[in-house]
Amino acid sequence: MVIHLGLFLGFQLLGEIIARVFALPLPGPVIGMVLLAVLLLIRPTIGKKIEGTAATVLSYLSLLFVPAGVGIVQYLDQMSEIGLPLAAALTGSTILAIGAGALTFKYVGRAMGQPDETPQ
Image (cartoon, rainbow, N blue to C red; front, side, top):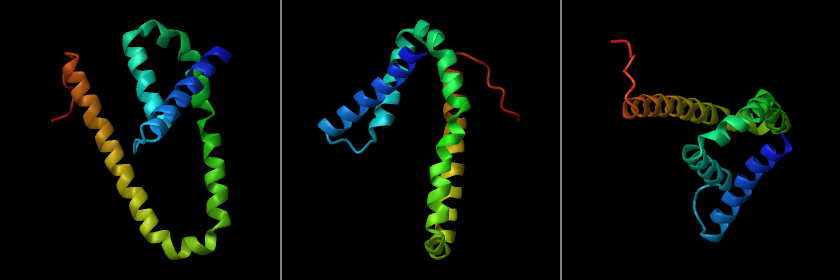
């Protein structure tokens, strides 16, 4: 498990290095995630090996939201001023992200030759 976590963090570090060296507008972890996805496409056996570790990390993902909640409570007075625009931005970006994800899955499924199961 430690080696797998090292792999995840190594790709995040590699992404950070690439983002800073080339002054890219993308966050380093996103670049690292894309590189890891490319590796998993090239070597699917690695995906089978890290599957358990990835599932464990995902099961504790909710802990990452605790600092965000503390930040909101700490700046509650400012939230009254910017709360409505912030809520609108969060709602809109969530809807767009869900739509983009759904379309991506649909087109990847088509590209892989799977039948389209979208209700008509």
